Image (cartoon, rainbow, N blue to C red; front, side, top):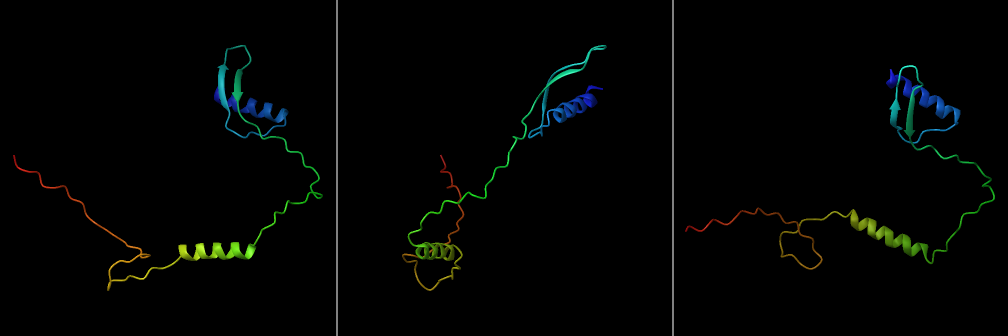
Amino acid sequence: MGNRLVPRYLREAITRKNSSLFSQPAITDLKMEEGKPLQFKAAFEVMPEIRSRRYGDLKPEQKDSPSPDKEVQENSTIFASSRRAFDPVEDRAIADGDFAQVSFVARPKAKASR
């Protein structure tokens, strides 16, 4: 019976306070005794009240960029290099600036006989 009454009375209390739940309530100290009112404590977070203000007069802060073209070029270079395709080279040894893909299999050494 309490599992049906607690949500009902909790909803009523929240509605009376004109609040909105932000988190799941934690119910504690539930007391159900015959002939006495149902009692419980509920701990939860509520949505804060947000009051709208006039914002039409607010101007965004604009920071000067010393050289937007240079920044765009640097970011384009970084982006392009991250998307680069690598062509396999097999007719020469690895050199500075090359990328190597290496795979290997590790096996334990054979144990020495005693």
